[in-house]
Length: 158
Ligand code: HEC
Ligand code: HEC
Image (tube, rainbow, N blue to C red; front, side, top):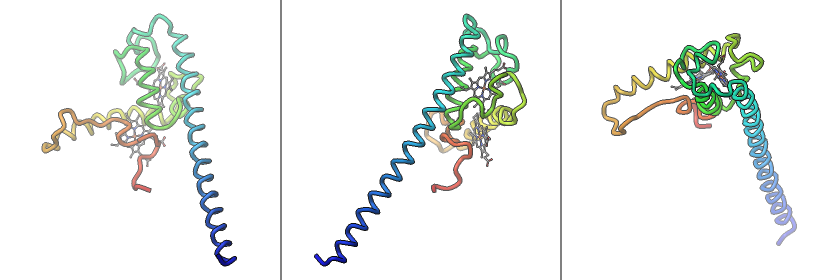
């Protein structure tokens, strides 16, 4: 093998190694980010659950301050909706929509958007009924359908 062949080979190997280590670095950062969001959500949930101990099965509107869309939903269940449907589907923690010192507060615009998005998703489910040729028994749409763990739903595959 000529020496310039060896140089090119070494260059290639270094490039591949650098690229793969960059990629795994990104994966680790993303994972750490997801884990720290989870830890934050768990901490808030635990604190709120402790503060409503014994009232988990009562309607959310009799336990919490500003319930409009989840009237009648058991208070404990509301926290699961908050964790899974609202936070995980958007890839955020509670503080994205809440002042975490006062969850009943209406000061954050994102909380208002989330209520409007709830209505928007329900309208989208209704519109889906117009797609008559679908074979699924119960086709549906929820927050994850569009958001898939991101605040801004994707407009392209890249
Ligand atoms: C995407 C926005 C969003 C995220 C993220 C979110 N929430 Fe909410 N949360 C809302 C909305 C909207 C309401 C009001 C629901 C209604 O009108 O019935 C609410 C209501 C609540 C309430 C009732 C407060 C009261 O006194 O009225 C609690 C408690 C709560 N959320 C906890 C959480 C926790 C804990 C998390 C994180 C695990 C979380 N939320 C994440 C939007 C969000
Ligand atoms: C049919 C698709 C679709 C569904 C279903 C949907 N969203 Fe959205 N959502 C969007 C789009 C599009 C935007 C605007 C993104 C932008 O600003 O460019 C958005 C924006 C948002 C934002 C503002 C993002 C930010 O930057 O803070 C929040 C919060 C949100 N959605 C919450 C929800 C929640 C909660 C649900 C389920 C109840 C939901 N969305 C269901 C499409 C959807």
